[in-house]
Image 1 (cartoon, rainbow, N blue to C red):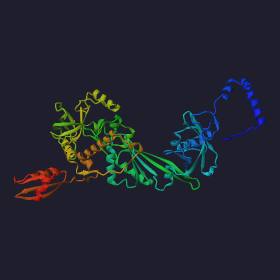
Image 2 (image 1 turned 90 degrees about the horizontal axis):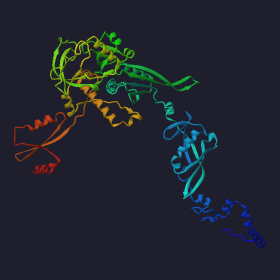
Image 3 (image 1 turned 135 degrees about the vertical axis):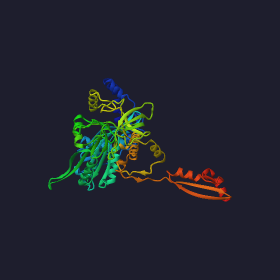
Length: 564
């Protein structure tokens, strides 16, 4: 605190000023009189005369004691890609931004998001720097309440260092081991049975050996290749296996105007015909007449590079090429999920079966497995396969309602011609598709399968990683139905490679006691032969011989017997 000493003439002058002060105050306004009469206090730190506040400190002392910029970094790094002139915006978005632009200021402020969350940002702006200096300076003005009813404002500078980093797209262009061609296979159906079958064909012929990555998409799968020729070879393989149509596109990645060279990325989009084996379809009238005048309502009996269709009323079969299908497309009326199980009561052959044909016409009396009281007689092409007492899978069309223009036209023509419902080409009540084996299915479910299939390592997309529980259950159900099709269809089973499954070994320790001696025997049993061997072990002529399996609860009894 400074003390000032006044001389005598100065004291007289000061007394005169105090005498004149009431006159001056009377001449001032009321607001100025309140300001003059306001109380003043001394700063608790430096002793300066200040207006009263909650902290009892002057502004300079508050700034020295409290730093509202604490927690906000004064230096940061900006990631910049020289290839595409973009900056990295957290977390993984690359944005085009020029120097001292709004977009660049947004990126800079997002780098300080955690620190600025505790203060109030009042103003932000750039400070000019040399463009080649690799430095970006931002001037920030912030406010924060430090004490009760006391808000402190502070200005500071944050310096950003520009660091070069390649974005993902530029990395793919600059890298030598990147993909140049992709084969996108799609099929717009509600199940994955076609892709499961196609996966086994690819594994059998080793058609995926040149792929760099395989990704699973929403309605299909993508194959990535380094060389375009490998992608073309994959397209030709798929053309021989499934009916499809192809669309080719190319994208310019980079170009050198001096040498005249360019780097392209090729995409081959393949769409598989949305018809699967055992589907019930209704052909357009024009396509049915062009296909040997076959009945429009047919079954799909085979899928290869063409669709094999069979008329279950006349055994007439045709092959529909992919070009013919895309000219006159049609959809499936019923799929494998709509199959209903029926019990075969009686089978009457209409004609002697041909040895060269595995199908033959027959009149079959059936009843739903859930309600055997409802019997009906239908014509089927499975007369050579079905026997009384068998089970068959078919489509129940009695209460079916299809939103299909081709099927509506077929029903109108059948009604106008007074066609019979069970014969003569009319709309039948039930269409039998194939024979069913419920007992074998229960046995395989209980004991497990002695064979297995290999799988291709597939990478899931980011959007498909978080699958719901219903989607996972649906995928498992599709795989189980595909395994059942392999078990029940020998023709389909001959097209894929089956591998020996892992045998479940069970170690049983059997001990017997006879005439005071203890005998031990170890038996390794597989899951399939376990029950049969157990029965064989327990069947013995000596009734005095006692056999029990060793358990943890009988450890003490086993130890005592061993000591004897």
